[in-house]
Structure formats: structure tokens, C-alpha cells
Length: 459
Image (cartoon, rainbow, N blue to C red):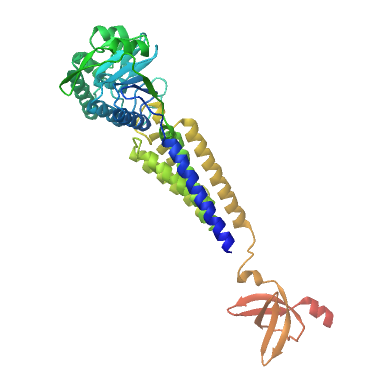
């Protein structure tokens, strides 16, 4: 016993030190020369993982006394909250920040345009573009209309009061950034109100950006010796011979990218719900319950990072509750079908974004709905089989069984039925050893009749 306890303690300590060493290796970063040029890459839709990655890079660059931070961008846009977090980091930075739309063929649409305007230096590679900064309509994905019902013209932006509020807010925001960096204010507002876009050469000509660079080395060469103003103080950048440190996304960023995938959020939620249901069906199984709780916690964490439509979330939860109720108290498909319909509609409405990267994909939604339907079908099928099955437990099962008379004294007759001894009443004359058949259950006594086998033997 003592040996086993010592061994268990040794194992716990070993696991603890291994985890400590692993976490240290994850956090350990190679030494960066002070005064280096830091490069952070935004590639794809801008979301919570992107803003976390950029802002943590800013902090690390500040600690290492970086001379310049370059944000390379190729993005279709992103979430408003994540974009504003990045812009706040740029505006608060005491290190020059240059945004660079690259490589050739890249774009800085929507949120990328705001980030370019916020940066101390805005640059683009040839054959790139920026603009189309009109906020997209918040709500559910638009469904195609039946033939013949298409509108002849698209409604103008700002047609409703809510749209006007959103567009006016975005317009004032980008106008303020343009005034701060002394760039083209008129086009900035046009990019928001009319979704205008510009090529790199047009953007340079209209004073939307500061320069065009073929690649990263060319950009650094052009910025060397350039004077900019930070917090009212002029700063001349000396970049010749500086080390370039490209900050790649770490494990935390990669994990956040996975967790903020709307498809994974939906799958984690379903696994969590079904894990809890299985744990209720099999108390003490432990594994389904533990896995279910972990998945639900991860799904909840992801939901608080994403723009959730609460009407969609309510429908989704209603659908899950109805499907769980169908599994617990079968209604022969009524609650289950209603649950699938509510779940599917809620999944479509779940996230307030028209960016494909932050929507639940139809294949994922269809797959989870089909799995749920199969689960409900199996539950209903089992319920129907149980309903048609003969009763195998309870007092009613004793009717029709045969027993043997043990005693018949003082008007009290006892018989054995299986492994049980019962007091019985009978209109027949019973003797010890007779075989009887149970006719009915009357409280704590049985009504019996002499078996035909006894009558045949007596005769």
C-alpha cells in the first residue's frame, strides 16, 4: 500500500514537471536584437484571434525597443470589434507602425482600409487595392428570391434608420483617422458611403497612402530616414542595417483561430449536449459527462468572442432542448422534428456577420441536423418497440404463472411462485403439493385455481 502511494506521488510530480517544462518551451521566445524591425502578418478575415495576435506582438515589440512595426495585410475585412482593437493599439503605440498591403494581388478591403488610415505610414505593393469600407448589413445571410421576384435595383446604403446609424458612425470614425494622419478625408468618406475602391497607384495619387513598395526590403529602404510625428514629437527613422524579425502566430493564436471557427463552435455545442444526455442515460459512465462539459465550456468561451445574434442563439438552444426532451421523454417525433427545425434556423441566424469566415457553413449545419434526426429516429424506434413489448416486471407479470402449495392450515394457504412465497385465496380445495395457477392479484394476496394438471392426475 505504501509502495503504491509513493509511486502515485512520483507519477504526479513527474507529470507536473513535464507540464511545467512544456509550458516553458511554449512561452520561450528567441532573443530579438533591440531596435529590430518587427513584422506582423494579417492574412484572411480579421477576428478575435487576429487582434489578440497583433496586440501581443505590439507589446513584445515595445519591450524589445523595436524601431518599427510593419503590418502586412491581405484581408477581405473582418469584425468591427477586432478591427477597432487593432486600431486602438496602433494609435497608442509609441513605435512607428507601417501598414503594407502585400503581396502583389492582395487587398485591404473594409477593415483593412481603416487600419491603413490609422497607421503612421500607409504603403501598398503594386497590383493591390483597398477600399469598399461600407459596413455590411448585420443579420442573417440573405436567401435567394424566387424567379420573377428579384428587385430591379439594390436599395441604397443607409435606407433604414439603423443602417444610417451604422454608416454615419463608420464614416465619422474613418474621417477622424484621415484627419489625424493628414490623408484624403473626402475619399475616406466615399469608401464608406459608396464602397469605393482604389488601386495602389490611384491611392498614392489621391494621398490615401504614402508610398508604393515592391517588397518588404524595398519598403524598409524607402522608410529609412523618413520623419514622422508621434504624440506631437518628430521622429526620424534610422532603419539601415536593422534586423527584421517576423513574428509568426504562436500556439495561442492558432488555438484561438480554431476555437473562433463558427462551425467548430456548433459541433462542440452538439457534442457537449449529447455527452450530457448520455451521462444521464448511464449515470456513472463519467467519460461522456466530462467530455460534454469540456465541449460546452469551450463552445461558451468561443461564443463570447464572436458576434452572436441572440435570437439565433435562443432558437438554437430551444432546438437542443426539444431534441433532448425527445430523447428523454419520447413524443414519437413531434418535439424532435420541432427541435431540428428550430436548431437549423437558429444555426443560420447564430452569428451577426456576412463574412463567410464568421458564419456557420450549410454543410456543417446540415450534418449536425442529420445526426440529430438519426438520433431522434433511433430514440423513437426504441420507444415504439418498448411500447409493443410485453410487460416483464411488476405484479402483473405473476398472473398466469404456476406455483406449488406449501401449507394449508387454519384457512391460510401459502404457495411458492418462483422464489417468492405468497398467501393465496381459492375456491378450490387445495392440498399440500398441489400445483396451482395464479388468476389475479388482490392486494397482498393471490387468487389461484387448481391447475388442470392436478385435476388430470386426481382423475
